[in-house]
Amino acid sequence: MQQREPEIVVISDVHLGTYGCHAKELLQYLKSIKPKMLILNGDIIDIWQFSKRYWPGTHMQIVKHITGLIANDVPVYYIPGNHDEMLRKFKDFQMGSFKITNKLLITVNNSKLWIFHGDVFDVVMQHSRWLAKLGAIGYDTLILINRMVNFVSKKFKGGNISLSKRIKNSVKGAVKFVSNFETTATNIAAENGYQYVVCGHIHQPEIRTMATKFGPVIYMNSGDWVENLTALEYEDGKWKLYKYAEDELARSVNLKYEQEENKSAKDLMNILMEEMNLKEKI
Image (cartoon, rainbow, N blue to C red; front, side, top):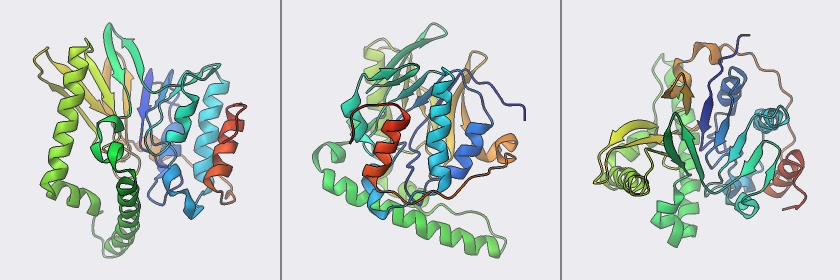
């Protein structure tokens, strides 16, 4: 298979270890490309919800695929989010082409980019962690219900329905939060001389130019692999929003995998540390 070769790929909010994660689709995407740099912008592994002990084979294959890129000297940056914050204690760890960092500042085509997950702007996250975790559990339950609804809908030749999107888009507070998130990120980026700001966290894929008092800033959000199945790609001097639903090449990739034994969060993180050759155990 002829792989595409984007220069930079940014993915976030994969939520490996949850029922909502579209690991198969992400694995197809990763196998269809040969990136020169991969940026994992938070919430790749969902440590919060690992009490369910849910870990299918495709989830481990994603971890192994990423470590394979590292073995081939592809630069891979891991920026932990709120759901995989356990990795934040390894901040500034570097081994070969792999690095863990809380933010990434790079220059691409003479433009400065500020890349971070985005939970730093989340007031609920900062001050009411138990409430945020409760909300995450409710969200995962809604995703399960959504899958059952879509199963029935397909039986009757209907289209897919996103209950969580409809709920979020109908709640004024949620819409306002997204708007405030984008405005805050771009204002801080502009004030510090960045032409681009790249986030995840809010599961809202986007590329758009926003005006600030310090000048225009291009806001980019890689979306997620729970609802939107999106990423950011840089190729031929341009950034674009990748959408799995529009990618015939990725959707044609055949996968072969073994079912992995279910694992706890501690088991999984120790495996990840071993894969990355980190000495300290969780």
